[in-house]
Image 1 (cartoon, rainbow, N blue to C red):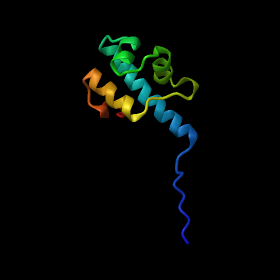
Image 2: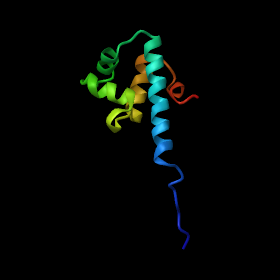
Image 3: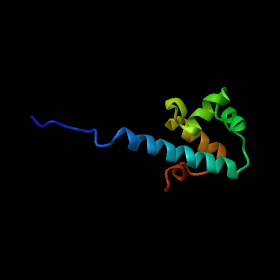
Length: 85
């Protein structure tokens, strides 16, 4: 039997990935002059503290795919822009 090991990333790599996405979201949001509160409400997040924690990757919080999809629509950008280096 062949053993599959799909864990080819480290926790640090994943954390860095989330931070990159959050930084991209923040930069695009700020370039459009939109506050965290306004964007949070636009995408259906009622707690600006939760949104802020996701944008800063605090307390292990990060955006999920649904958040990123809604954010891309609200900011009128291609979702791929969050993943570019």
